[in-house]
Length: 418
Image (cartoon, one colour):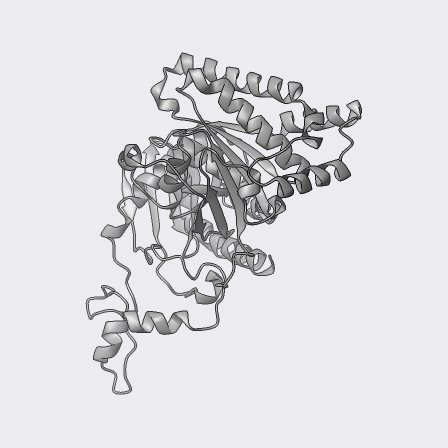
């Protein structure tokens, strides 16, 4: 395997300027994460969006109260981690403010499958009736503990049981249910459901059942491999209004560059935000995700090369060297006082802070004699990974990087509008 690593742009550890800063979270897309006790809800969030090592997962405590995790990506997120005894009336905001529900089910707990699925179906039905536009994902978690054959059997059994419970759910009971925790709020929710839906009508109930069964996205996940990031990719892509436009740009770029596939990644989380969808398979997505994770694990070994600003007499000013790099071209850490001054400026998106002359990270890896993976830091927070034939890479690299400038500009324009 041969490698070619060129200069690396700024490490994307701080994401505070990736989206407009506001005092409230109204601009954030909210994701509600539910699940049974010790199912792995917290580990699903922290290992991806807070870069907590998988080896620390066994030491996570039981979630006692709702915790909100903010994450700034191409879409600003707020992920709500909930305790196992969560009820809808514990939410501080209407369920209509959430875009997605992720339910985490522990694959290794055979004895609690049925009870956990019943719990999911009860919450899912009620959430859907209150917010029909919401999306549902089930992470069938901790898949690494089972053999491949047994894993496949359990995966199919969970899907089959969930569909059966949706069909058998007593929909009429929602209109008369009571809640000991907050009777007034529960009654208000029941009245809202009754106003929106005629649950006495079998045709309406049948439509609800068919919709719910078809809408659930199932993913087998583990914190020890790329399956968890692949599952989160589906979650984030489902909430991206600009996804069709970005995918169209990627497809156009791939075609004009004579490449096989293109993937747009969130750098910090390693989640795929968009692809060109040309002959894409789950195995291919996992392979590319693994490649990106492996390379980015070493990105801090490289330093940013910054330009010096000469003074009027042509020499380098000491203060300028501190701000923009020493004489050897190795970047220094920014002054904390100057960082705080920048934070007080009018907030904006990453495209407002972007330096068009910045030395963006780029790298290529020859996987096999005829296959190459190439990576470019696409923006301060995004990376583009392209899969192509090695001979194409050697012959058309200049054309590919020329096309990349138009792709980056196209994504910038889409984000500035959205």
